[in-house]
Length: 359
Image (tube, rainbow, N blue to C red; front, top):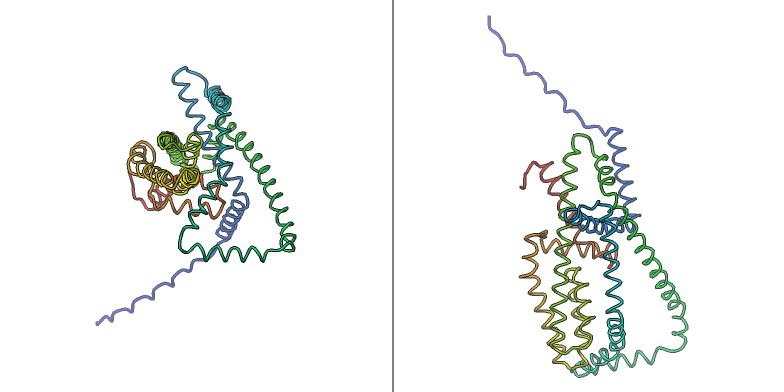
């Protein structure tokens, strides 16, 4: 008896993925968290800056614990009081001199601007620019000035509000830093409890690694700032540029912001040196260029062997992104924020999601 081949069974229909209630709720919760983070971005940036300061305070407290066996909380207070004491002593000893130099710096700016105008006026294209500027100035009458008075008043009030807001933010930053440094284990345990039980050990390791990387970055950045300030001060002194101390301090402080900071400090130094002569201003520009070449090609690679190495292109993008989103002051936090983002992407996405072990 001949057996006829049986027809193949029809393939089961492909199951369609349905959007569950849990997916909708999770999406809404995530959207709400992102909106809240954007709305309170200023407060979150202050909290992040407080964490950085707390890491530095606890690093000093752990050093005292290893050397003297002091309690961590007591060590935090001692480190904070030591920093305040050193700053107070520095202000009392060098404050009058630095304040006088800063006053001279402000007073010298008009002369620097006039020297710039004279230099620009010597250029061939300057005559056309000056004629257009004088014509525009003649058209500016008293009526237009009166119309600008409300805007000028608003600008003054806005500056006053910004100053008061800055003082309140600084006070909040100091209080948060102290509390986080004193009770770091409590906040760490609370953050880990937000993670599901199977992943808590992994989350704890990632948090500890982040704290170590941020601490190394701050130590390396502090060393870099000091060396840049010393090199700038010595170079400006040898060039007999006035206000060398305050210009060196500005160079060191602004160096915390890559790309923008060195350019700003160099521009200020060149402006101060310009009344001394065009050749002095050129020497100052060459000095700051040489310092930045040394810092970028020699100093930072040596520091990054023990600190954190960051891709330069991503660092620039982070600075631009943070500056455009949160303002110029927040640019100081662009690099440590990049450290956090890169580490989380590396550990959580590349290693845990993709399964690619990087070390």
